Figure 1 (cartoon, helix red, strand yellow):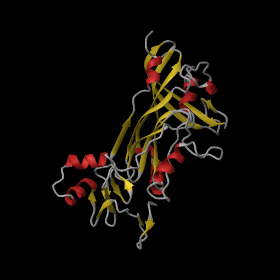
Figure 2 (spheres, one colour; figure 1 turned 180 degrees about the horizontal axis):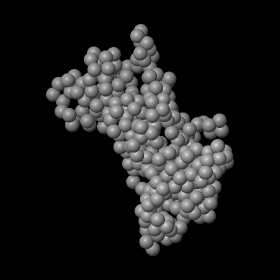
Figure 3 (cartoon, rainbow, N blue to C red; figure 1 turned 90 degrees about the vertical axis):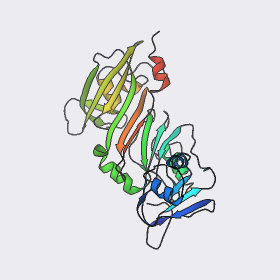
Figure 4 (cartoon, helix red, strand yellow; figure 1 turned 90 degrees about the horizontal axis):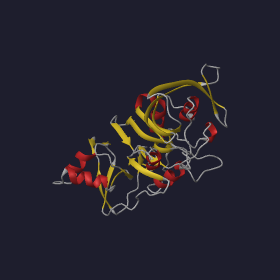
Length: 308
């Protein structure tokens, strides 16, 4: 993990600033237990408060996970003042961070990944700038993506090994990945499943009920939450994660996502694509702990569905 300069043993080792109290790790331990031993008399609640205030670092990386596994050779740093590296950005909210992963909530209009045309106004670039505050060689690694106009929860890795673990074992690691959408018209069914073969045509994704040799099989489960004002509020559970999958499948049903002109919507009541990734649950790629994150339905979605 590239979090600092390398020690003689070859393991990355971070530089430590004088404003930290530093504890050396000599044997395996969980972070909470380690701090309680080193800081004699401190309560569990006080340790949790320190973690929540983001003033505990492991090898110069802010760590908030109470059971983070420490290994011999690591350094635990306790800031003597409230950490001044708080993450703030109008397009991106930091939901969770530890030494291996970042979970964020991005707003619509922000690209997930840097491209040749757009390098700076992307979630990837913003997070790279953030982690470089700890060390100039730090960077984030892309695990999955959300469309530019889709808002919601995303995860990034902090090192290449964690990225590969997540990508190679995505379907085993991720237990629940759910979206909410406002779609055009009244959905005919309360529950259902859409299956088709999706082919990326660059400008759009085409859908076919049969395999033409080019497509990738895609499965979307849906539940209709409410129907009102000529729209339906729908929860969508992805069994597969293909490009534009929800947008294409809702269009296939004859109920395109509101604001999605590319896939057949002729209305834009919110001035945005009405699609939000509101739930992300997964087993931590390093600790194995079940991590569960959920955001409320966007206020604008609920407002559109209010009875008039």
